[in-house]
Length: 570
Ligand code: DON
Image (cartoon, rainbow, N blue to C red; front, side, top):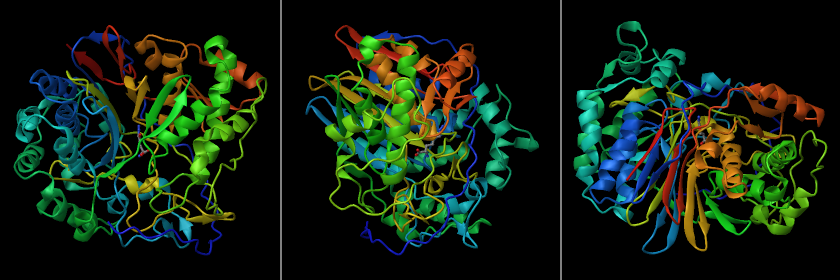
């Protein structure tokens, strides 16, 4: 891929759009949280059929990479609103034999024909939904190449074996779950294009819970991929279909076959920060996940949370750490192949100074970004974070100790609403800033040709004494960052049982109001935060935290009761 150097062009003085909060997917059927134990291997994924497909591979002696392929192929069928072959993601891999952690960037990519004014119409940022729906929001998908890449790097079983469950389910059908049925019923404009309408709204009605649903087009796609790998998606028939689909749409996309041919999965160094003796590792740019989770932890390490314990002081500190970290995220973080970013975002002294800005008794009421150590400082204008509904996280640990922690997505639930070859196309290009510049300069996360939009996805692996003891992550758009940071604190600082850490009611702050999760304790928590000066909004915070903990006694797994996932192992 050709990477254009970052140039500080003259800033256009375009005000950032006033964006309303986009509600995350609402929680369906809160399940019972439980910690599942196993001795050998484990999978935690957002749908029982996907977890089963992974377990079958692990039972057959497959690696975590093999199981990840099987899990993702089934997720694309049974949880199509959240991830699939038309999307992208980030995957952390722990290779036990080499004692090595690698990070794999399969983020969708902007067309080479895209310019910073991509999301402007008559000089004004387009409305969010207008941008989401249709061909213009689609970036080059990364997931097909990610699966091929991770299998080539770490696979043990033959590629074709990994397709068995997904092909059978796509041919024979599977039962539509309550969550999928509700997602279909709630989705806007699923009737925009014939292929998506015929699949999700057969006879004009949304798919019903319990209906049996086969996807013959997806079965054909899987058979092609089983025989030819990812090539058809980047230089063959499927790439041609995607290009034709986005170009035929009224909101015409600019993708070309050359964009597909240039696509690469990029292996990057994981971003790690020491936290009370552990090393918490995540995904660096173009995701803001690892750095922002890292900043929150680096700030919170200055407070003795294990001694402070759970309670309002800890909640207040957590919210303030979120505000400080998001102030930096929104100003500095983007695809670092295109924009220079401060090297010192996780600098110890810097985060200590940031922590000193917190008053233990009163909310700061909005954090300013800091000035971390930075060799090539450039004027910047901040971007707006927005929560989203889509995306999935799975964690896998195989019998030899390899681990996958992967977050994959098509962005909003049902992505761009465009479907081809049995899968939905992403709307990931709406993760770019809509306004490329503001009064203070260029926005780091503006659109540029061949650039990857900033993500919040935060697949995480925690190392203790050089070996993993936890793998975790979640969907939830920008809320992913505090969801993951909060669960980490519960597990690492308070040794909470895994299921309690993932089920614990959410509180988060993205440098705006403090959001408190709806539920029995919400009113009291809101009142107490308000008495400390927080502006509070109570809302449905739909995480999908999936985690595996590795203990001296074996494996523990837990799936977020807010979704339909399960932990399976032996
Ligand atoms: O990359 C990102 O941060 C978003 N596109 C992820 C979207 C998401 O998590 C939706 N979740 N429910």
